[in-house]
Length: 319
Image 1 (cartoon, helix red, strand yellow):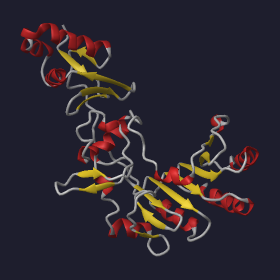
Image 2 (cartoon, rainbow, N blue to C red; image 1 turned 180 degrees about the vertical axis):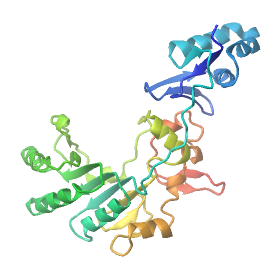
Image 3 (cartoon, rainbow, N blue to C red; image 1 turned 90 degrees about the vertical axis):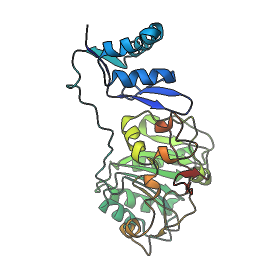
Image 4 (cartoon, rainbow, N blue to C red; image 1 turned 180 degrees about the horizontal axis):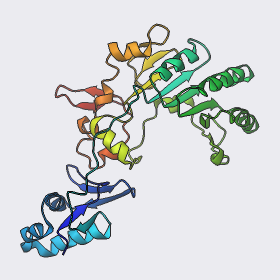
């Protein structure tokens, strides 16, 4: 008989206050398990199989049901080897100073290319620009901005534009699709939601910009991803390595948050990072948030709410 029952590296046991799960991040599978099964899995991770089986000799039927589940769901496998299976590190690392940013732009109040240049210097990979207008006089500027982004380290660019008409939207799409960094165009305040042209990355939503700016993610929105899991162990993936600039040039953690750390007309982004507390929310891991830290699904949840520090050093959701 094989000596060990090894848990696959991408399968993680996550305990909550009332429930526990095994999450297979490779197969995007979540399975609820009895709390008593967690102890069995912990023992299997450190001891030979027969030792664990003998420890539960008085609960043989329950033990066997746990083993059957692990094997049937392909969470584990038998082997004579253990040391050769090196566990995947839970440490999350990223070389970027800023990984992603959202810019709100109304073609006034500040020079957007100067802001984008600063983000590029910080190795920003993902940029979202929410344009507040797209009339004929604005389209030339939008094209210049997208052309400027083509030569940056930026990996992808997503833009929001106000909806005018379906015909005009398609004309805009065909005008802008030549820009290689442009990943998606979202037309907001559309007369209806349209799913056509999705394959060409053009989307329509009835929501207005105020709703888009202020809306938090739903509790049903889950991200089953190993990198996201690792990041949420140490950081808040929504806020981590992120900056936002509103239409007035104010620099924030998130456009909907009230706290302002500076203005792009007066402060450089690197100055804001060094001299203010803008990075505080970056480090609020999901284990530090009241109402979330005891949730077995906490490492798959997306927490976009504003947060406030409590006297105990934890954080509470304030909106």
